[in-house]
Length: 381
Image (cartoon, rainbow, N blue to C red):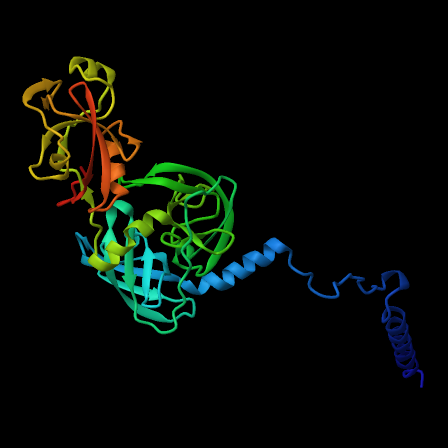
């Protein structure tokens, strides 16, 4: 029995210790007891304010008309030979026949075009018309139940006016809408050197892949075509530009019907150097601005207007010029300071348009109304 006593005492002590620890620490002290969180929940989602509701309505109405355009081109690698390259941009449906307006640089050099609609369906596309100088192109798909946009007007836009942009930034985030204001209306030069007259500057977030997408007013009408950004990094910096929709509407008929823009020309060869006061004094011209005509194409619009070219060859610096011709200073009330002004005015007209030309023949100021011819080979003057 003595040998069992220590064993029994050990069992009793172990049991007592187990009982004490189980009951003593099995329940946390009162000061450690956690209370449930008291949160405040809204009874229901608050109603949208007027601006939010308008944004939602515009998006629902226009987003089905905005498409993602994937272009496949071929480049040549010295080591691997021809390589397929893909690009992405945006566009928007302008009619039930499947015509889509976008930027020229979105489809430039493409061997294959594919359009992805808002419902994720894919369709092959063909180029109907393209115009590099306006950075515009029209492509077409064959698809049912298309929803076209409403084209508004870009005239009368005011700095501070609210705008919305819908597109596919980076070709990944399809159907993205951003908002901002009209920051400025200005002339800008694109990377290829062409100019956009009265470009719409906006702080609405525009990134690569948004090119060709619509810029909208608060009514959901297209007022511009998003085309480029000003950025040192290639990403959005709050300075984006859109081609005014009126410029697109002016050439849309030509692009769809003829596949090109019937660009007008006067039929002149202008002085290749800018006019200035020194040159005007040397040539004894009545004003120090305008386009000096060196040569007139026989039978051209300029010839029919009575404009004459020069008759004396001289050197001005390194340039051989022909002097003695007429000086064009105005077309349809717009002053012409140099050849660039003349090209911009021609860019805003179509062949067949009638314009009033003001010019100097010697010291005599004259005017004539004439119908513009169609330019050949890219000539704009």
